[in-house]
Length: 120
Image (cartoon, rainbow, N blue to C red; front, top):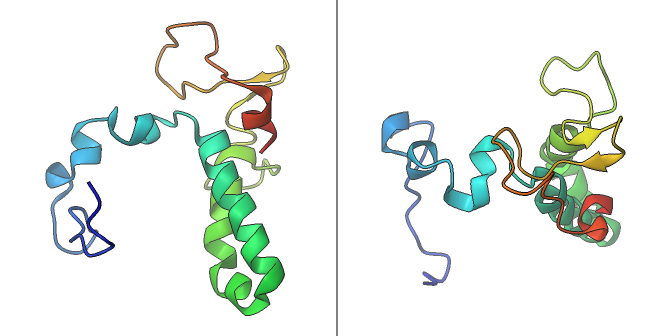
């Protein structure tokens, strides 16, 4: 279903109570984004796209920089001093891989679909 960008948002921080937001009621919605599922590669695609746009439009990058960096810090934060995000949330330094399932138990091993997803 495509609403052509005219859909009314169902969740806002200003109007709706949290209980009315479908993503909070169903953690499987949006591919499990609410339970950190696949953040390292879904957000990696967004960050890559933002880098491409930023290269051609530096004023756009300056406007969105803090939001882009928040996505980076969500999955690949390098600083233990950061109060908002853990260091490298998805990286398992002992096994040398990224966990794709977030905080829910994985049905199959660590559920990393491909190396290229983790690299993004």
